[in-house]
Image (cartoon, rainbow over all chains, first blue to last red; front, side, top):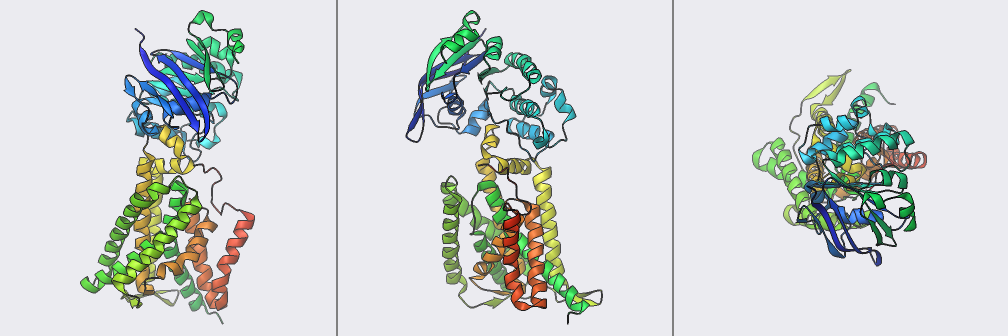
Length: 229
Length: 290
C-alpha cells in the first residue's frame, strides 16, 4: 500500500532579496518516481536544495515520513534518509571509488555494498580508480551508488542524465525503476521522453511556481509536459 | 670557503629549521584547505607551545614534558578560538578570517606578555650529545627534531588516507556541501582539524624553544616564512607543505653560509617564481570548492 513519504506545503525560498520559489505544494509516495520539469532557471534545483536543507526556506514546510525537515541541517536531512544528488556529477576527485563509497557507508553505517554492485556492476571493476578519472556516466553511477547506501527514504536527483550517452541513460532508466521499489525518487529532468517513461507523477515548474500536476500515467506525455514549459 | 663540514652542518640546520616550518605551516595549510580560513592564530599557538615548554621545563627539569604540555594547551586554546570565534565567521570571505586571526594573534601576544613578561628566555637543550656524520659533528637534538617532523608527516598521511575521518576531511577539502549531503557533520571535522592544527603549532613552538630565545613575539617573526611555505607548497597540500618547508629551510640555512643577505631574500624570490609559474603552488589543487 503506497503512502505519502515526502510532503512539501506552501514552500517559499529566496536567495537574499530574490524570491525564487512561490507557495510550492507537492508530495511523493512510497515506491513512486516523481519528476519536476521546467525550463532552466524555473527554480527546480532550488526546490531540491530547499527540501535537502541546503537552502533555508523563507516559509512553508517539508516533512518526510511524518517528520518535519524544515530547519534541519543538511547533514541531518541526509541522515534522516532524504538525500540530494546534485547536477554537477561531483564525486570526490582525489578519492578512489572505494573511498567514495566508504564515505557513504560512514555516514549511514551501512557497509553492505551488494545492492550498489547489483545496480552498477561496473563499479566493482573501478574500485581502486581515482574518481576524478571516471567518465561522466561512471561518476553518476558512483553518486547514485553512494547515495543509496543506508537505504534512504527519498532520493532527490538533479538532472541525472545531463551530458550522458544514450546507452548510459537507458541503463539509468531501468536502474531508477529498480531503486524506486525501495526508495522513492524525486527527479529534476529535462529529458522529457525519459520522464514520461519512468515517472508516476510530473510537476511542471515555471517561474518558481508549480503550474501543473500530471498525476497519473495516462496523462503523462511529452506533449502534455511541453504544454507547460 | 665552504668546507664539506660546513655544508653538512648547514644541510642539517636547514632540515631542522625546515621541520619547524613544516610543523607550523601544516596547521595553516589544513585550515585553509578545509575551512577556507587564513588562520594566522596558529602563530599564537606556536608561541604558547614555546612558553609552556619554558615554564614546565623550569618546574620539572624535563623539556619533553614541556613540549607535551605545550601541545595540550595549544590544542585547548585553538579549540576555544574555533568554537567562540571561527564558528561564526566560516561563511565569510577568507580575508575576513585573516584579519580576525591576526587580531587574535596580537591579543594573544598581549596575554603571553602579561604572564611571561617581555624578556627573552632560553630553554635548555634536552641533550647536548653530538654524532659524527661524514666527519661533521651534528647536534643530536636537531636530528630528533627532524625525526619528529618525519613521524608527524607519516602520521598525518596515514590519518588522512587510512582512516575514515581522514578520508572525510580530504573529501571536505574538495567540497564541503557534497560531504554534508552524504550525512556527515562537517562542522565536527572543522573542529577536529583546528585542534590538530593547534597541537602541531604548539609542538613546533616547543621543539623550537631550545634553538632560539623564547619571547612573546616569536610567532610574528615566523609569519613571513610560514606564509611563504604554505603558498609555495600549495594551500591545503600536506606534501606541498613538507617539500616547501624543507626547501625554504635549506635556502635559509645554506643561503646564510654562502651570502648572509641571501638567506632573507631568496625565499621571497622562490615564492615569486612559483607564483608566476604555478599560481596554485607546487602541489596546490585547482578543484577546491566551498
